[in-house]
Amino acid sequence: MNERDKLRVLLPHWIEHNRDHAGEFRSWAEQAGQARDELLDAARLLEEATGKLEEALHRLGGALEHDHA
Image 1 (cartoon, one colour):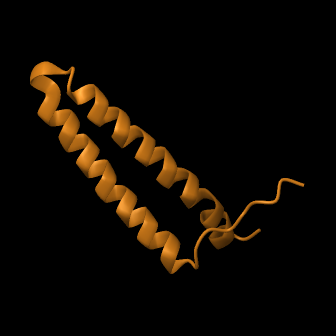
Image 2: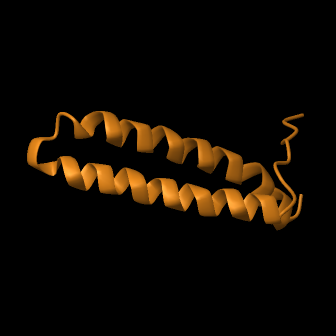
């Protein structure tokens, strides 16, 4: 598998991972008191980064399933 195809396998995992973390940041923000705004900002920035990863995946031709066999 070449490097481009590896990215097409990895990017969907990174995208999902970022989405999970952004959701966690938002959930914790309500309990963070004076750090609430920073956690919400971090979630927003992570979502922006996720958008860039999605764009990269699209430019590479979309997701490629990894065959574990």
